[in-house]
Every structure is written in C-alpha cells, then in structure tokens.
Length: 172
Image (cartoon, rainbow, N blue to C red; front, top):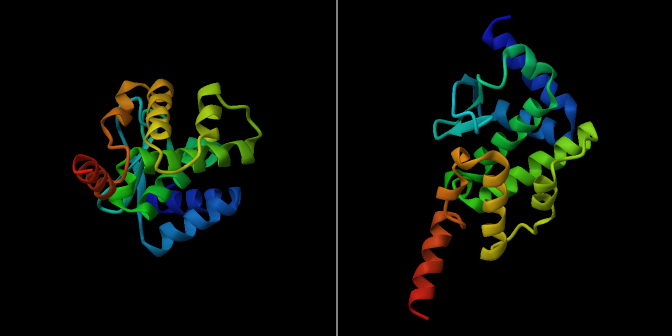
C-alpha cells in the first residue's frame, strides 16, 4: 500500500469510528492536512506542525497498526483538534487539556475501555481558565505521559491570554 492509499484508508477508519472521527477526517480533507509518520520522543504518540500536518510516532505505530488501533484513530482526532484550535491555543495547557479530554472521552466511547486513574481524573477536570485546574491538568499529563512529553514547559493559558493575565495582575 502506498502512502496516499494508506492516508485514504486511515481517514476512512477514523471517519467510521465515530461522529468526532468523521468531523476530524472532514476537517483534514478540507484543509488538505498532511498525515504521516515520523520518529519523535517516546513520550509523544503523535504531533502536529505549524505547516498544517500531523504525524504518528514511528516508534509506536506502523501503517498497518494505525488502521486497526483505536488509539491511532483518537490521536488523529486529538491532533486535528489542535489544528482547529490554532497554534496560540494549541501550545498551552488549556489547549492540551481540551485535546486530551476530547481524545480520551472518544477512546472510552468507541472501545469501552477503563482508563488509567490519572486519565479519569483529567477527564473530570472542568475545561476553563482556572489556573489551579490547569496546573493540576499539567501535573496529570506529566505524570501519565512523562517529563519528556513537555507539558511542563507550556503556558497555562493561550499566550495572548497569558500575557494579559500577567500584565493585568502586575498592575492591579
């Protein structure tokens, strides 16, 4: 199977998995997002780029496994979510919490799996701009995915909101 055939088969698998998958596949097709494989840190299962592409980590997935593994389908939805959010939101704990919750709720929905207790706690967090909640989300992501995942380096809020928070706080 060549790469374009694989891409189409992968998009179909994701689209058939759920309404969320169908919406993500539609978005990827409409925006002509590149989808493929690249090697990344072991803590990273998939990642997006500023060039409107995303990749599954070769260390975790093959062309064949991506077509049969529900985790590869929900990662597709996670990375499409980041591309929909835009870079400023995606590169924040807020953006990660939104994408993680979207991904793992979908994984539970399509597989019925019981998730790790840290993921269940993450799913129970309210998505919003409460700094204590976002700090807890960052801690849970780091605990689950490891230090190498890099959540510790992200600002809590999207950068424009983070700047406004610090500017407003400094002069209150």
